[in-house]
Length: 390
Length: 49
Image 1 (cartoon, one colour):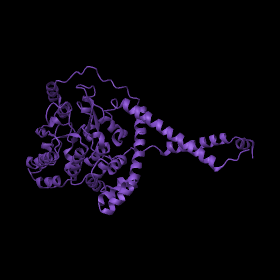
Image 2 (cartoon, chains in turn brown, red):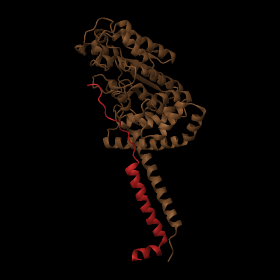
Image 3 (tube, chains in turn red, blue):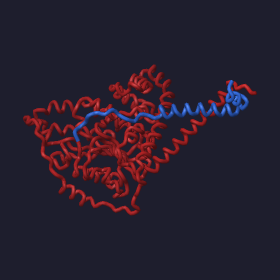
Image 4 (cartoon, helix red, strand yellow):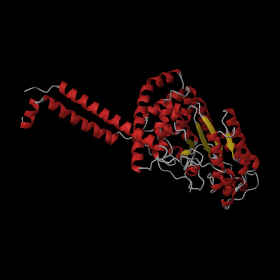
């Protein structure tokens, strides 16, 4: 009879850990293969794994026939000609991969982009801007929290590809929403140290760096598993990219969108004297935090070597006019946006010529309609195929 | 000591294998229970689509 010693228990534990490690590795490989196989099939979807994770977004940037489009509620609003559906059959050889949902403000988009990291280098990326986010001085906390991803935030906080100054400035903005950091003490601590930026803060940030990287590694593994499981549950059809690319006659598309677009009626807004709200509108617009967040995105694009395109919807001219905001005051938005884009050498398409065209919209919010999306799509197509110098 | 315990004592390799399987089951259960990340965001009321 042999006595079982603690050495036997240790050996058993090592065997069990090795087995568990192998199990995780096999699951990761299987999920990664599922992601690669179906990334085109799920391109138009807006699942949590896609929006709050990192793996699928990274993978999308590595596909030659996917164009990632960041935005917010306009990507969700069910409208004919919406880019994700319009480009689904690969009419010119690519599909749009939308990332965003209602209330995805720039601070949330910043973290999604930063989390993609080096996979953005040399890649095209489009960003759709909602002007109404710039009308309030502070970012709506519900919007930000409703789009917050701890993994994406942590990838930014412990990014080895972004400068310390960019991480510091981002951390100072992110810390203004402490509710998002409650259950993430490593992230919270790192953001505090980044925001503090004293020599002691930097030393403590360096000390917590390995923990942050470990947390990110675990988060990435969870992300792959989540994405793989979600795709498996949906069981999407394999991608059916046509062999022959049909092409698009844009003149016909724009003409059709013009003729089919219904002109919505203006809502019953409180009539105010012309220009009576100009001062308050410009003051809020000037002080809006959203500008700072957009600038952080543009800095991130530059540091990561991306090829961005900014698209901005027009303002709702008639609505704002009715409520006392004159065209002169409204022009402040375009001027600031143009100046910011030029400062960071980011191509910008601002559809301000449609400011007084209700047919551009689907409703009275920042949601393009059939006509608006037709124009968006034309720009996206030109951008993807580098037809015009933007 | 019952017969099973006697058998295990006589077969240390089997004892190690069974212990490893027991530990593995615990680790696998923990991974399934707590290993998945949370990628959901809080619900919030936005614009009236």
